[in-house]
Length: 314
Ligand code: UDP
Image 1 (cartoon, rainbow, N blue to C red):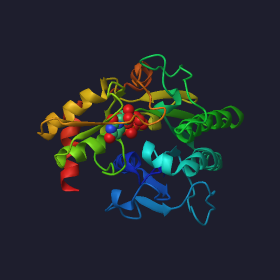
Image 2: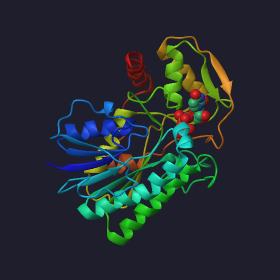
Image 3: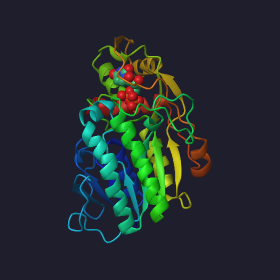
Image 4: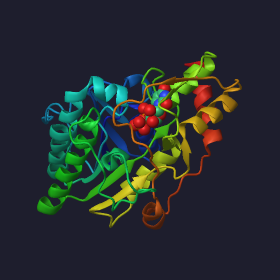
């Protein structure tokens, strides 16, 4: 049986990945400090399937804390990811993406494990080209209100790449674009849970700015399949992949689809645009298609139906 370590595995995306890994026969050690995740996302597993470790990866876990003889792959996802959360947890976000990333890399060296770094489309900042290929260096405010996340992830990429160069770590970097689905917290502040909750409560959808900024929304099962392909495929060391859905929409357009799927008449309330909110975001996934044979399958409408169902019963 193969063993994986997933940091941030009690979070939204992390817990779906843990489900997938266990289904594929992995034993998974999940490390999470529960700052934004919850063990409720991973019910029903036995100790022969997952090890749940409530631990902050900014502290290196000793052998007593993490009693594993082997690990084949480490997937480092631990970090707040919602702009509202990473503003609130700005220092923690900087630390987990720097010190936490180095501790996860030290574990990869210790176990001689493959290392998959969860990075973000935020490394492109407010991009000046669209769609964004992996080769784009970005356009980022280095000390603005989103810098704790953007620059934290950029530092993490630089650090991981140096571990790859210096110590030969089998590294894969993934840049996630907006992802959504069940297990998002209804209060996490991101546009998908906000709009779905507001539609369910028959409230106006809060559109920030003029709503003409764009995003591309990837359903979580598609996202996890992309991550899984990167985990299992050989000969990808040092490679970087965008993982996201290339269908780009304005936020106003997205509000219309949410209202339609939610079965409500669209009402909007305009609010100020948060600082440094990117004007556009859309992945170029040519590389993922070519190297991984992966592309998203779930339409926005289909994904939103499932997301509404989750929010209705939670
Ligand atoms: N947004 C919005 N209304 C909301 C929440 C977010 O219009 O209630 C906008 C936000 O300004 C951004 C986009 O939706 O342009 C996506 O925001 P989110 O917080 O989901 O993630 P981001 O892509 O900015 O990291």
